[in-house]
Image 1: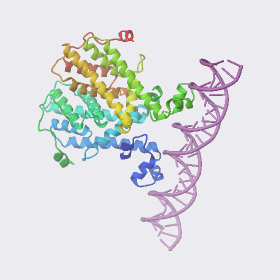
Image 2: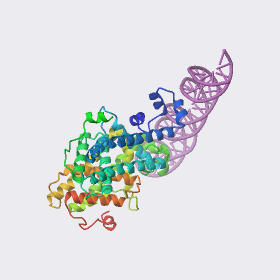
Image 3: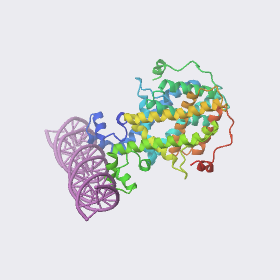
Image 4: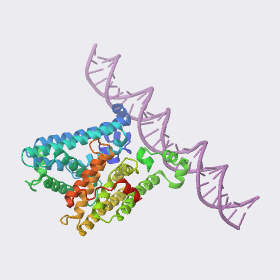
Amino acid sequence: MAVIAEKGLGATRIADVAARAQVSAALVLYYFGSKEGLLAEALTLADDRFYLRVFHDLSELDSAIARLLRLIQLACPLKGAPDRTGDDWVLWVELWPRALRDRDAGRKREAMDRRWRATIADVVKGGQALGEFSSELDPDDFALRFAALIDGLALQVVMRDSEVTPDRMRAVCEEVAARELGFGRRYGGFPDEKEAAKST
Amino acid sequence: MAVIAEKGLGATRIADVAARAQVSAALVLYYFGSKEGLLAEALTLADDRFYLRVFHDLSELDSAIARLLRLIQLACPLKGAPDRTGDDWVLWVELWPRALRDRDAGRKREAMDRRWRATIADVVKGGQALGEFSSELDPDDFALRFAALIDGLALQVVMRDSEVTPDRMRAVCEEVAARELGFGRRYGGFPDEKEAAKST
DNA sequence: CAGGAGCCTGAACGACGATTCAATCGCGCC
DNA sequence: GGCGCGATTGAATCGTCGTTCAGGCTCCTG
């Protein structure tokens, strides 16, 4: 995953992966069968890891607003120290062209996206049930729009667009969420690093 | 451009392009110097064409609302007959991974995006000046959000996500625009094919 | 009509990189 | 202690392109 994120899907050679793992290229083939297999496993592993992390993080929060804010935080490609969240987005950018033509990759991408939208929608539904969010909004509609917004912003961020920093992305997402879902801003603010570390 | 859209940047061989043009592979190199040059020119040509088309189309409309609706129309990847608008999005998806690592590609992508956001912001400013749009909105802020929304939705559409059809994308974009900019829906409706053909 | 300048091509050439293979190594088991 | 088996590797092998090259074709010009 690290090598793909660094070099790109197309430019990733078996020898690179082998070098990173400090083994021979032949051994990589021994375990993964082929380059295709290697790349496929890496990409699905990345997806699974991300979703697992989201699922785990969200289940620890009891307020829907907190869950939504965490969702936004997890979706922002930070290139800082904590972990390489930006790598996830790089891998997705790499995955997209492949998903256009490879049937399996396409299915996996669609499943991942559906899961992501469903997660957003679930958080919204929970918030509506708890009375934290306005009930006038259709959760699935909102999820579609919000997921698209996040994708588009994250794309700029991961491309290092100087006008769209991670901070600005987070701010925009929070504003939109607050406006559409009708909850006040700074509801205890954004979970800071200390809090995030505690939960890990 | 057609070959890249069909096969993908990585899988595009000089021989493919040559075959499509019904010439020899050597001739392609004769004109483009190298594969890199060929791909770079193809991608920039695609960008320029799209922007020219946008610029031309918008300049023919006198209502800001009509311009905004046309903007939305042009951004929707239709895979129908009219022209291959979807190809543009495929090419961008191909461009993104390259832009992550190739300095020139990155610069071009950022410029393209900035131009696109500026176009949106200009339409909004024009509409505010004409009194068609609410003046409370910051045009640049809106442009950032709206461009991201379009990117995210178009991504799903071009990936053939069964839940995000071109029609739904258009509908979502129009709703968001109408709501945020404060103009009534169905202001003369959406320019239909006849009208679009006339302007070509 | 001869000369030359582009235009165009088929046939090498070479590099690169995935895959294969035969040989070695380490180690638990009889 | 020898055996067998999985792990591991260096060294081929083999295909696939990008690129180069030497030459042919066409058409314009003097």
